[in-house]
Image 1 (cartoon, rainbow, N blue to C red):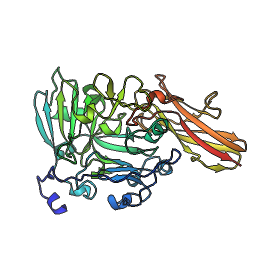
Image 2: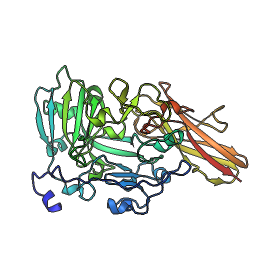
Image 3: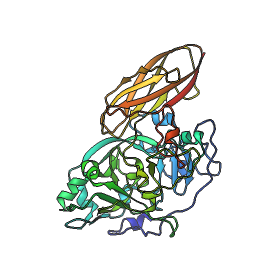
Image 4: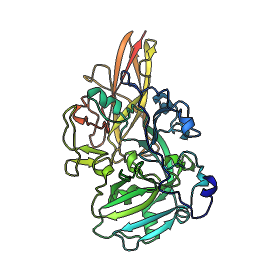
Length: 412
């Protein structure tokens, strides 16, 4: 494969993809699933990944990061970043960035001058760098499942990372190559150079609002200062800071400028939030009329320390963690409660390096001997916050968990 990849103009066959799945492991007391014994460890599936990552599926990859590993670094290293692929090229796990095929991106649809632009032409343009929260919209599904059963891999807190992407603003590319959307354009639909596991399945694509794309999106070429790994969408990925990870389309090969949101299965039947609450345990049929896509991330906070179930010495304990949202309004407050939400204490909130990055916070607490449940919630400048009762957010796919975070510890 590497020899073919070095040949100029080569692109992998659309049939060169993996398919299938492996059994999921079990969930205990709201904690991440244990890795199934028959499933290879992450480092065996993806060279360079940490052996500690939790593998739910190997084909395509669904691999979570333990929360303590997420908390260990302000910038999540590549070996610890979670992986969620809907389909994956056979070369996505093993091909080094320098061996990637020569790449082109097509700009088509409602534009004045359709273009096919090479990746080398894009690389020559001015680039930007953004530190952002990268979060799968299934992050927190294990918490939804405690309210009522849900479908999908039981992500707990580790389908998220704080990373730096570097690349070329999409507006810069459009201006340089005179790709001018006309007045009827309202959406940009991104296609990746992957293919469904079975010919009968829908190909993967997503539509994004045109204005958000022009304001925020860029073609990412680097991750944490190095060429973007293939397993994370390299050589080029469409990244829109503040959006859920599913919208950061990997291996991007075509952008269509359109008047309507795509009716693709992955855009309409999956990756959506209902406008109205769904009854716990009920089925739900998503449509464009009753739901919205997973675009802007919801306000969220997570406690990093102390760890869940920790046994601590009674007295002064430093509680710390992170908070974030879609970057469209600042995080104003992070609050903690030890009495079930009846009263709250405000944490000290650090200013992040980017409005799209994690906001670190901390608060010292005096814990008397006994068991304590600590709650955490974030509130942004638009008044958006995390609910104590998440039943109204429940959905059968377990998407977009945003409830208050909770950690139970024992002080002795």
